[in-house]
Image (cartoon, rainbow, N blue to C red; front, side, top):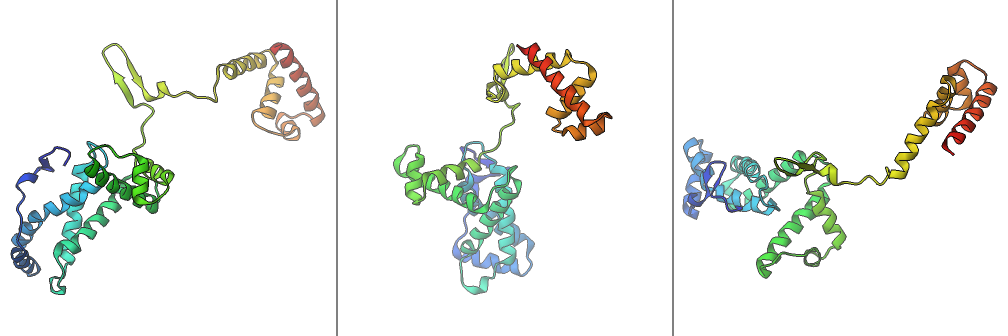
Length: 258
């Protein structure tokens, strides 16, 4: 479990194992309302929860404690709803319950809404990655994962990206005593080139050279997107006057910029 021995205060290396006979006896006592037996049965099946959540841990330092607790909720639900008279192993019944509880948690807890089908592909890709890396003893490439799953590589890439946590633009990339750098400092805005910025500054200066009425009319026409008729109503002059003032103001701006 990412090199951890303790998870949620539980020493995972000392969890007990039950034989089939012990499991049968305990589950019967649980169904008879024995709370002590239920507690013992839950503790004995924490290994089952651990084995399930490993499939959902796709990066180091992931939320293993959170997933473990959610998995335990699924385990308890499985115990409460399990019918020992139908002749199937408890683990066979419990695993889908634990998986379902974890998937619901991940779907609801994630800050971005991602479709269930895309998440399912992502989880399948994570399992495929684990199997490939266990067999090859090296990091699995996207193409290998896609070939293993028999799905397009673009689909695998999109699915795995969908599970990535979004980063804040204020996320610090490095920090020392004298300097710091955030993610926003390393992202360029192609829409705000130096030329466009200079143009904006020049236009602002050009507008300042106009009188108040000329400024108002140009701002309403070209920044608010109003028609000459709408401007005339707002300013309180005729549409013809608006047209004349607009043309005169544009000539003045053009001269200023040239």
